[in-house]
Image (cartoon, rainbow, N blue to C red; front, side, top):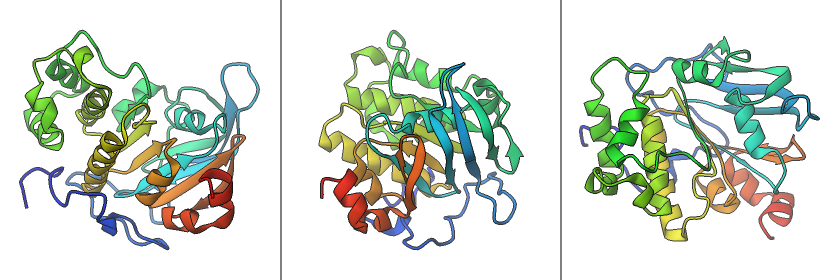
Length: 273
């Protein structure tokens, strides 16, 4: 095994990360904490809310993820998938329900305060500084840290070798898939307790999508919980420990990725049969 926690057991063809029927989570990365027994590490519980004074978009929606797990949110366009993610990150009003991180109620915290608490968030768009170099983007991800972050940067370069090759190049000159790697790497520079990804494979080729999913699996294997909104539902469910199908802002189906892939109604309604 290598010295970098992001390097071992590559490949999403190995489904050992998934645990059909539920099982114990993978061991934590060093320094990670665990919530109280029976409490998910991160949970948006019965969230109802919307933007500003607008109507409710979420309706008693519940999303949760534990250490070592990949949880995915899928559903039709306009189902509230990204809204649920943003609610958990504090970007809209949760009018009822609550968000808990590691046993602490963070419902009333700002997104900036949630980053300090250990939430890493990668939005779908405008997620890099295009005029800065790749390395400068990663350094910006370490803005809340006061320790030496060079080891973390080295781990990210091992996870995404192309970024090391292009580290002095302006990030705006990279391909779409490489930009997504920069965005994920910058979030990892905070040493997050949980990583949230909003449509990480949007607009990339199938080959790049597979590569990104491989890297997401590697991060999960270090013990970091990953919560992901994804339009490529079938591929996302293949790597998911937990999966949530949302319809009109409410939970429609919940289970493991394999359970939902095998569900005839889910297949017919959301996966094209």
